[in-house]
Image 1 (cartoon, rainbow, N blue to C red):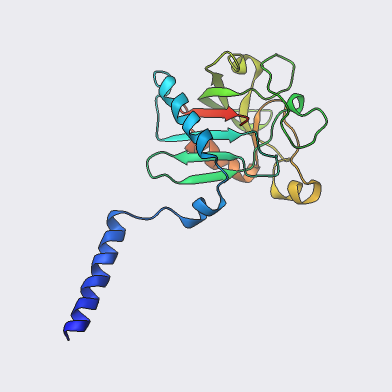
Image 2: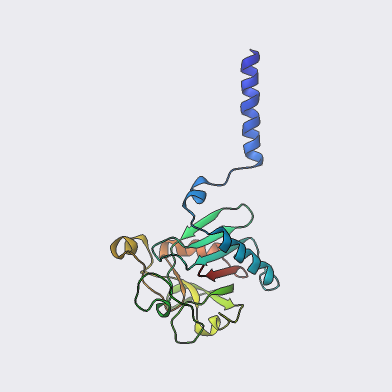
Length: 201
């Protein structure tokens, strides 16, 4: 009877402890390719631009050191630590031979290249790519983003089928292009006034 009671108490306490400090989803930890050093840089950027970034619960990080076939865009929930990693395309001007690797950044209008640095997410709108979100560049490396129409949008050339058939994604005109199936959560979780950080290792 005493043994049974101890077992019940132990089980109950374990369950109660789990409620107090729930574990992060194992899938997020197992599948995320987010480099801890890049996360640290993104957090530093959040601090640097804290006056511009009004919502600090979720940040987006594009790791352009990785090949386009990898889930290299990370939605990081800074409150519970959960990380969602998704496919994202880079610009044609950053990968002219279409290797799947981003070779260089550019902030030059007409370059069709991706730009690195810190962005503030701005208003959502409906344009030629459907539902999209504008971005404001916060640094000299990307301060022409709004002028260049560098935005978040969905694209047919970003999905697992493209990866399985071609070994890489298609390329954007410098925008952060996502799978149509992932676009809703990107637009919702990375709403206006949040940080999007892009870097290449």
